[in-house]
Image (cartoon, rainbow, N blue to C red; front, side):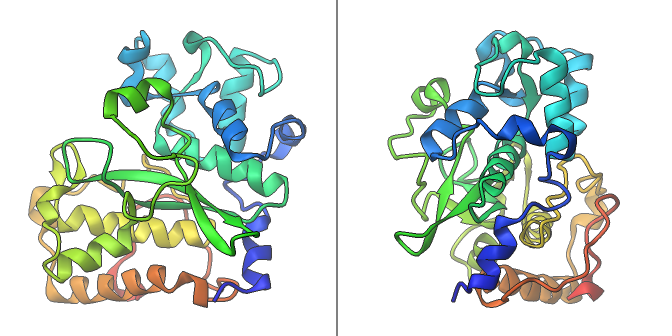
Length: 281
């Protein structure tokens, strides 16, 4: 059950979504989801799609990929073009980012307007060669329908046409994006193959475990960066022992039961380093 305390918790900025000195920039950004997606798409280009937009991902532009917070995103955006955020940038001056950047930016704007929102890490069924492709989205609370709605701000007209996406990406169906905990549980039950889950050639149960932990952290408003050395794992260490698998079973259950927490009370983890050890279950 989603409680008023939980909605209040997700309506407030966290350390990562807080725009800080750039707060005023969010004042005129729309809170309606379709309009907000258009704004995000006018500010950010996914690095994996850069060449489709005619952009060469130079070393200077790739530096922006390491940005962890909304405040850092806005720093890069305003340095390139200091006009209001609702003004679409030429693709040549947009932030080069990832799916996380779209989700984080949308989450930050919604929280700025007092709308409960949270970033989620999991797998999409509409993005790539894997049946379940590594992906980040934003959930926001739809008060009039008493439910969380998934918005994927990354999917613009170009990507929609290329990927043949026919559904509404401002309210993604629950069977098209699955949280990492859902996919972990499906694989453990034999209902999905770990080799079908991941990013390009990086697939498997070890990868799903990483996303389970990242989703858990996002639920506590510690939306860890993709570049925080989480995937620097040697092939030999990708084999998960029984203790690690059991610990991840517990973590996955926590993410699936997130709406029963009330306000999350977990201690804030550091935003650098390696994934949670099994003892954190």
